[in-house]
Image 1 (cartoon, rainbow, N blue to C red):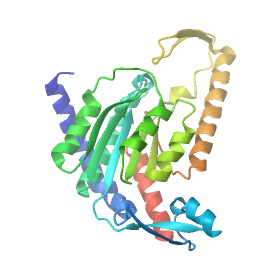
Image 2: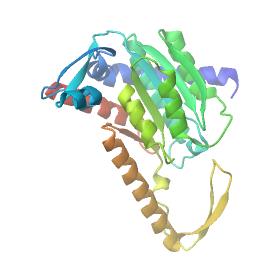
Image 3: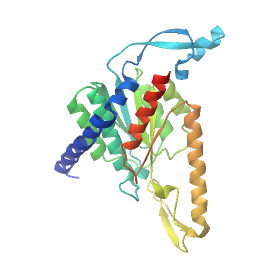
Length: 293
């Protein structure tokens, strides 16, 4: 896209997502994150209602009973939005590409953080972290992050979630909110996911397309193209569609198990539905859990 087109799209996203943030989930964002300390201070004995993810395993093991980490209260948070720009994100059979959905989610979250006067950082990754904007405050910086998600041309097409998450964990020295927007179509990244979940308040946003789980059952042979490897293969939809759907169901079940094992709450966005609705539901769900506790 030309620079003028990019700026026009940034402006459109700012208007559309900004209005939705103001109307729908800015308050929920604040209720979930505002006042949650991010700077480690000390440990104390666990009491019912404490966050399980705050349990300090080393101290608990030495003491023989659970202890949790305490943090210094901070008004200003650090929010890092990590967006997967691998080849699979250029897929879409409904209203938008998965990358388009990722841009809208990233824009909405950046504007919510901006409304709370938080620091915003950005990471764009494929087989590696290709671009990193260190966390900073201000509208100009937030819109620059949105512009990068829109305009950045990735150097590689593959996905290496494990390597990218591990690199991010080492780059981000202070605890913060790490939002990873990806289709998570990779394997071998559970260890890196757990590391990020321990060091940060990790929020996975899963981007999906309906055709990834359901192809039409028809008497036809279709050609499948892998946008990350460039390979092509033939699939007979008579029976092949059911096999593909079963494999996708198993993949999603394994991904859900992985998220549960890390104690993570997940937002799922589909290209055939309004993009920000699942994010609104996510914040409201987390806000409700915090109020209950």
